[in-house]
Amino acid sequence: MTIPTLEPPPASYTFPTKQTLTYTVDWRVFTAAVASFQIEQQGTTQKITASVDTVGGVTMLFPVIDRFQSSLDTKSGCSAGFSKQTQEGRRKISSDLTYKDGKQTLVERNLVKGTSKTLSAPIPACVMDSLSGIFYVGSQPLTVGQNFRFPLADSMRTVTVTMKVEAKEEIKTPAGTFQTVRVQPTADEGVVKNRGKIWIWYTDDARHMPVQVRASLFWGTITARLQSYETK
Image 1 (cartoon, helix red, strand yellow):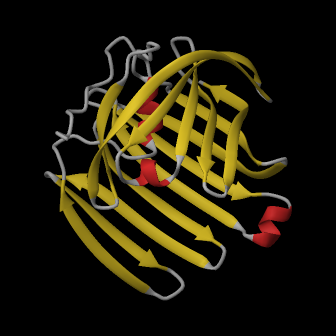
Image 2 (cartoon, rainbow, N blue to C red):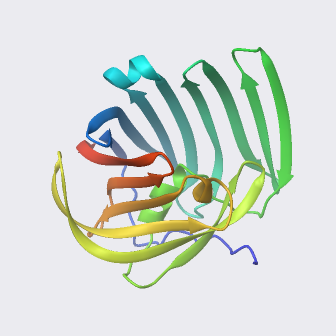
């Protein structure tokens, strides 16, 4: 399949200047973690920082402290790269993925073993990363029944992600009740496919704010619901 060209965000869409979104992450009947996104616009660059921290008994069983950073150009939609620092159980990994001059370069460090590796692979001139992609999708029209595609660069591959705009739904969250549009990202390979089935619910208004995310995985379903939000 031919890799599609990443379409720039519509000129009519306004990215938030500064926004904080906080979610409770539930697994079965338990609140397993708290996640947050911090979005800040600097010129034509949208910087996104995300965190996931386990809470309660889950922390005793399998502690997770994850941090993610990415940025995208609000005019072109192109991502500059994606960084993450993951502490999951005894595993501690730091990785930096950059997109430049038609190439993605990954520098990954194992902080427990003290080892590192560097990998590179070709990419199209303009690609999306898996964190910025959540907010890039929010910039699109999201018309029910009309799907769209974009190139996602991750794990030394460039894959085509198809966003299926499925239906409108009313969603209740700790932050309130929202009229939403449900979107399902799919891919034939890569990080999206490997994480099972995923759905994202965006507010059915000009903001397209993500208020709920659900991932159906082989070991169970996790749901992140918006707990609070602050926009400036």
